[in-house]
Image 1 (cartoon, rainbow, N blue to C red):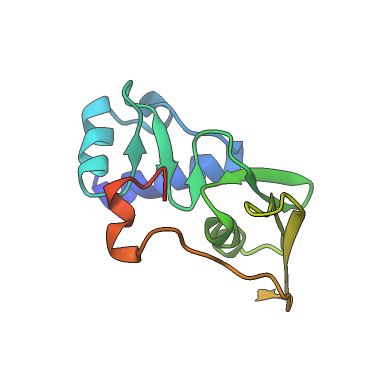
Image 2 (cartoon, rainbow, N blue to C red):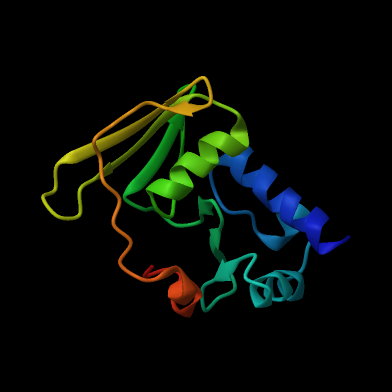
Length: 136
């Protein structure tokens, strides 16, 4: 199976189950996962489990994409919007402000982000994101 086909299987599993697949769940091996991690398609933990398969998170986070009564962990608010876009669904991305702790919600309707006065702040320049993608 090609890397593209495997990545599609992984993302489809996330979409359906709202959790990270084990290699056997997508007819892959640990070596397949490592190969995808080497190309930044996945981020794995020390045991080889998926931590990130953008836009999905394989671990619980403070960012939740919600649609049609279901929810998925995202790596950040931007990825939460990416989940809704990838699934073609209207929904809400929920988190809290990292500065003041107030709840934040970004709503998507008709494939458009509803206008908000929420401001995004990127702690790390984009060129350095893959230095430590989990922290970024």
